[in-house]
Image (cartoon, rainbow, N blue to C red; front, side, top):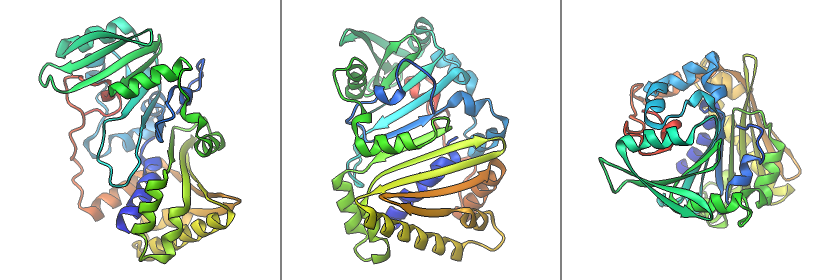
Length: 341
């Protein structure tokens, strides 16, 4: 039960803590292969250039080291309009990280990126689908291998070999994109494309069965196993941050059951939240509504309120505010753009 609640809590907190999309020849989801069922879209340039969000981003010792990223990758993160992370997760028990990649779109120079990467890495040029494909292995840890390719002058894909090759094929029209996942695409279209973040997850049948089994002794929450797809977005308007979660269920009756389960969880949260705390304030602002097969959860808050919430949660959890090391300094993966140390 705790694991299931944690999954949904993380989905909501991701919208709170992870402060999406630029006009290009293609929507970024058209570059993500259908095999991926989890997609996160973030707007680094909007986040890093907004002073209201800096305290959230820098919290807990994870300050964005812009200079290190520029030095190791040749990319200025404040000029990256969006980053898309995608992966395939078929089970709650899955520990397989062999499929996943990121797509970065913005201002970048191919030769500069390659020159910077060669400083601390072995770079081998390969070819796939008529595209240059680069194998990157760290000089410190040669077994640490990743791949990347430039889809065009402003779009870079990097990650595991299979995921990068699939993205190349998807871009070329040889493979279906994640937008052909009907539930996921419908939720995506219902979310604000100006969001700072969009998180999408299409839940496979195996995971639904695992959720049902995990909740077998919790009848009030059994309805969560009927969720087909989840979408989350965070939009900043002036000082306000509007967070929305959309959930689709098997049918209208299931959606009502899911809404009731959310309401029960929210009531429990209100009951245990310390009086006068930001946790209590946030809980009282959350609203849940079901219409047709869709359940909507809304929250309107501010960056200051979220910053206070993080502090309270860290205090309750005994978290070390200076914990976490982030990515290494050798620039062996362009993913350091969004996961700096």
